[in-house]
Image: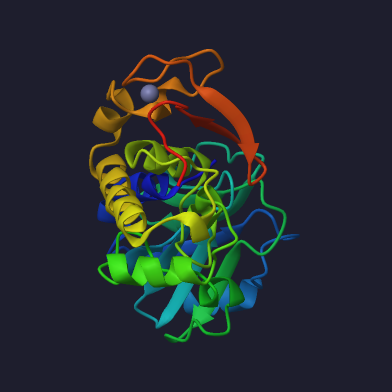
Length: 265
Ligand SMILES: [Zn+2]
């Protein structure tokens, strides 16, 4: 499952190359699901340079100098990556943007529909998905008081459900939600209404710390012996106290926690 740090790494790998480059040809591989007619793509993208590459939650936004933006929804397994034009596209290839130098930017995803959008101007309001998307967890807007306020309106949810709710905070998936709860020493199945403001502040602090670390130092974070994320397998033990991890299904997802280190509210 794609989570925010994965999208950051993806962007890091192509943004330096693609920013400022002009797209010479647009190839739509999956005409069934890419809701973008060739005429609009040719008019607004072909012959135009990519101005900036941005991320919001799990969306990758390519802003063009022609005042349009191409938005990719990463869904559960989306990937944006650079490849040589001579390499055959994957079966899940959706769209390819070719540059004159022989490389191309590809978007592949097993998503069925609605994962590529062309936005004209700066108005993202017509795009329901981005409209309803919560705050980016790494943005300055997500302060502790704001997080506590958002949690206040979702009292009946579990803590993990709150963290994974895209309308509250965008881009946190199953594994990082568990990691945040583990680092904050709170059980993911706690009801949000039962948590104190101090506990929610602690969750907020580790939410930012875990995601920032995973984004900036992915390899180190994933090799950290103190992280739960490396031990997500049945029968494995807690990295802190060596108690056997508990596994349960929460928000429809396989959840791991330490029954000793993580407290109920
Ligand atoms: Zn433990």
